[in-house]
Image 1 (tube, rainbow, N blue to C red):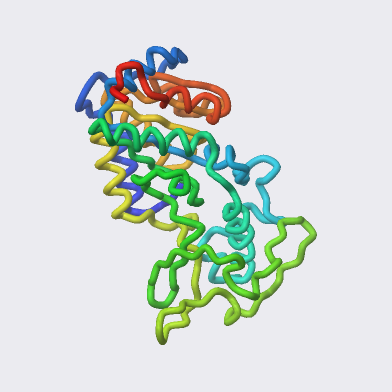
Image 2 (cartoon, rainbow, N blue to C red; image 1 turned 180 degrees about the vertical axis):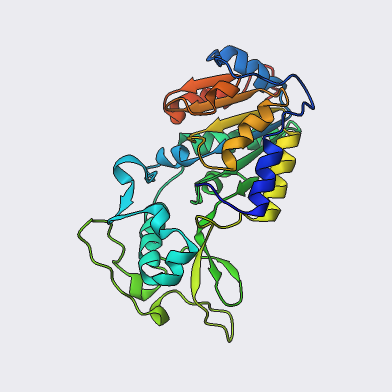
Length: 304
């Protein structure tokens, strides 16, 4: 998903900079898989940024919408997750997002989520910080106990009113009566064609505007406030982990390389190598639920 907007474009330009602030520029090469060396960097780090993607949610059973889950009915996700699609057919788009909401509502945090949350709580007591910068639209990081979470692509469990702009946490199941038992993904399932006045509506007094999922649709601008906070964290961190992401979605794909360009250690945890693997100091291949927990476990130097 290449999000074309001035905010994203300018951020992307800054992230492609090779300006060195804390160390030498890391040229593309072969990353290390030496966990003992990574653990030394982990023990020294004061401010850790953890970038997470769909692979982390997949550990909890949330489909990644790639491969066998690439389509909902006969449409790709980008055919539905756009302002134009919502304007043309809000019923179909709400069916898709109702399906996605119901998928995540009954999921539990995985070993990855729990390891990150435990690490944040433990290091906070030592005066160290952990921030999660996630592309995931579920709430599993917070359910696991993570406190410092920046959700760059929004949340499936929030709504935004098209009329008054009110953003509200909404975990109702179903989100409205008309969507009950709707949203089945089968290729031969017909659209429910729900009247627009029966779709989720704003409950603010005298509004009743149409609600939409509070997510970033394809082609929309990312929240500038969140991007500003992300940029601050990228400049502050002295260790970065890139976990469960294909590193093909911008601008998030450049977060790790930008940190690496400052000479800061970056470790990638993923099932496979990615287009950005060669820019990182470390790469640990395999299920994140297996590789990440030992990487974030208490180090022998920590005072427990």
